[in-house]
Amino acid sequence: MKVKAPTFRVRKMDIREIHDFLNKIWGDIFDLNEELRRELPEKGFRVEDVEEAFGAYIFIDGEWRLMKYPHPAFEIKPQIEVGATPESYYFVVAIPRARVSEGFIGLFLELFPRSFIYGSREFLDDIYNWRRDGRISPKKVIDKIERSDEVLFQFEANFGSAQSLKKGLERLIEVGKEWGIFEL
Image (cartoon, rainbow, N blue to C red; front, top):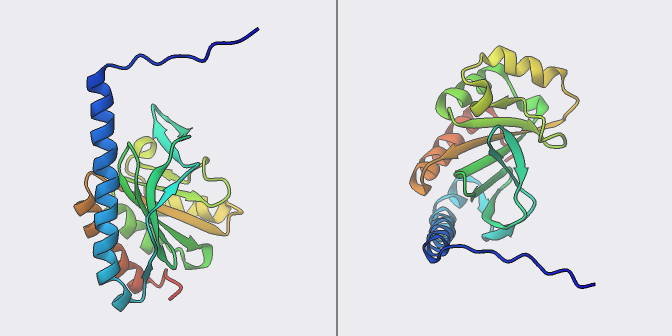
């Protein structure tokens, strides 16, 4: 017995909106990648090519959901990923436990109010989630980190545009160098 594959009935306008949206975020990330390739090497960073990132998660309706579709992303070596999902433009910086401090956490949360902090292994069990936790003291965040058995933490910040993301990256690099989070 043959089972029919489901058919999708999407209005043409919806398809065009999806198409235009995807072209926008991919185009923005390609443009940002080119800009950063010119600017960041002098600061000690290497910008990789834009790739199709698979297996990411997006926070929708109060829960993390798997994205089975690709989104544009690229790495800034040594520790940063930059990209765009249907939710936002973002960066994620990986920081070893030994380099995470309460002072850095406080500044990160102040500079990047739309942020998430999670471990590299148990990433769906976030340490901090701006959509869920709202304002929280850096002390509470560092206490959660200290109780965790994770050795590497992901600090993610979300932005409404590629230009806001670029400004956020510039600020992250400046602050990250001050607080010694980078392995340069």
